[in-house]
Structures are given as C-alpha cells and as structure tokens.
Image (cartoon, rainbow, N blue to C red; front, top):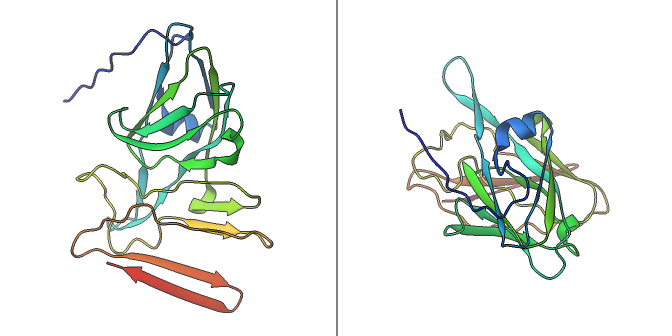
Length: 206
C-alpha cells in the first residue's frame, strides 16, 4: 500500500485545499478558495481518469470530466493551472479579464496544482460529459488531453479504443484546432477524423 502526503502552504483562507476532482465532477459540484494577504494559495486537484472496459477487457471509451468554467477576482496576476506540481507543466493561466474565455478544461491527468494570487479568489465549476462529447456552441478556448496525460506507465488505452473524445461544433462557429503535444509509442498512432454532412476526412499521425 502506498501513501501520498501533501504539505500545503497556509495562505488559503478556507481550510480545505485538496480536492477529489473525479467525485467533484461526477456530482457536478464547485470549488472555491481565497488567497490570504500572506501569499499565494495552492489548490490540489486529485483526479482519476476513468476508462470503461467491456466484459472481454477491451476498453470502449473513457469518461470525461472537466472544469466547465473558471472565475477569479485577480486582475493583474494570473491564476495558474499546472499538471502535477508547480515544478511540472504549466497548462493554462487566466485572470479576471479572460477567465471566462476558458471553458471545459479536460481533467485528463492524475493531479493538478492551481495557484491563486495573493488577496484573490477563484471559483471553478466542475462537470462531466455524456457520451464523451463536448459541444462547442460559442467562441472560447478548451484544452483536451488523452486519459492519464503525463503519466507514462499508467494509461490503459489500447489501439481498439473507438475515440478519446468527440467535438460537436455548431454552425457559424469557426474551430481552430491545434495539437500542442504529440507523443505515442513506436507501435501507436493518433487518428483525427472530420465529419460535416456528407464530407468525411481522416488523418493519422505516428
């Protein structure tokens, strides 16, 4: 049995700053925290990306959870979201002027650290997707990762996985999709397909 202990700074006004991201999203709850005048507040989000297997042990899809919306009172300093600790990868940052641009930040990794600037508050609304589908109906930004992103040896995804997610883009919305990072094994591949009416296209990267 393994144990993991987090030693946290005392700059969060609310006592709880370590959260279960999976259960929070499953129950569609929210997370709020305030940084004191003494320094930045660090929020830890522990996550469990869930892969659905059939009776033969073949994974059909994984359930997608996300931070649906971000809000902060910080005007000049950014709230920062890291994969893992603050020593790991910076995923995104936002302040009170652009926080509402980000929506449906996919919780694909096993844990995150969110830093809230001094004398600022943050509010995050969590949700889950039905059928692993994200609907894009208005301008904005989202960040999508494969399950267990950043964990080299714990991703139970196989070549027979039908898809890792579906984006449904409404009419009159122009989508700019950018692959930020791409890394698969020598036997793996990534498929990207597009469907629009009778138009079908597919690309594969190895």
